[in-house]
Image (cartoon, rainbow, N blue to C red; front, side, top):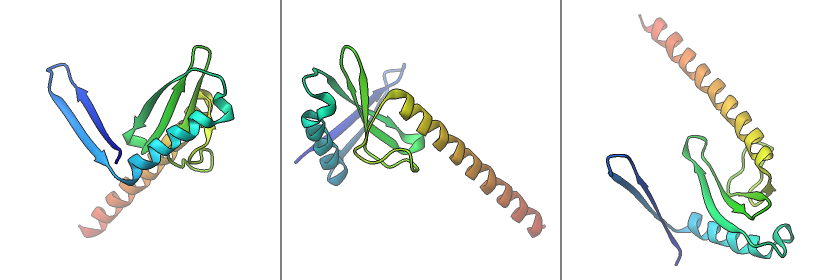
Length: 122
């Protein structure tokens, strides 16, 4: 069984934690094993980290070597990022900027509809 523990400590030394297990964690470990065998990283020593951006529901493996970094997306983002795809930092940034803009626009639409609905109730 694979499991993950995420810890975050703030300045007051308060520790937040999250324990996860199951299918998402199994898929993450599977992607890590696949990355180790990938031609993208052939002969390259790298460190693997997990990049998680909760506000955009984005997660990826962040693979860093001395000379470069690659990201392996763990989620699909629009049409730009596929699960298991290998991407450079500029590609990830571009896709996430687009996703953030899309989400902000959707949020503005929802707020406008709520205001409109509230006015019709009066």
